[in-house]
Length: 91
Image (cartoon, rainbow, N blue to C red; front, side, top):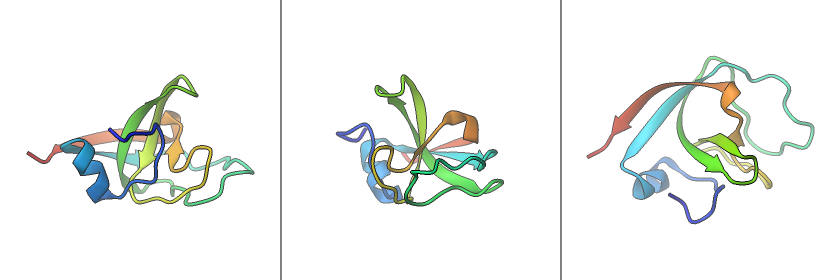
């Protein structure tokens, strides 16, 4: 996994850390926080993601690969916003 809990990872960077990609569908794109700067998922779209346990939040966060966002959460979203659909192993 990445050295840091949060990071803006590309698909290629993510596969260097772990030999799989998870895919999830956004099921809740509402209530974007007022201080969020960066990409925001669209409801109904499928995204390559990485789920990382957040020590700060105390729960797993969904990081959308290829998204760009600023601190404090970069490209991380609460798990209630996504439905995990598929894991593809690359080995």
